Image (cartoon, rainbow, N blue to C red; front, side, top):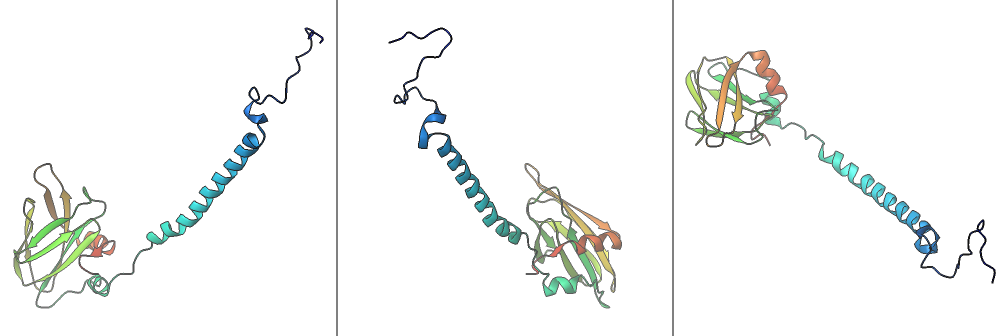
Length: 184
């Protein structure tokens, strides 16, 4: 056997797989990793193609209800007043806020919802339910429309609704971008 000279590399035993790198391991080496990478890319692409239509279908907006369409005509009543209570979106909280209207009607508002309340002329009270300390009294005349904007701020101990009478142009804009409470 000839000794290896200083300028040449020793011959490598190709039958010994223990010293081979991962690229040289045949079906367990680079080719297999390439196939695995292709398989993963194919799987992820298929998953994305399957989920995208479902995701976009979930974003489809439902048509407005007949009651919502009617309420957005902003028609006044000759013998009664109309109060629109609207909660704009975004609001300080996504939570529902339950309101009492003259201690007789109970509604729950969420961001992006409104309620059309037809009342007899006179003073009417809007207030938060239970721990909600918000309160407002509004004086209503027959044949007129009033807009009240609600903001809801949850607190650590007591949530609080704030009510503001807003101009008709602002109130109509909020209502037009909202959905009627209980309209579906």
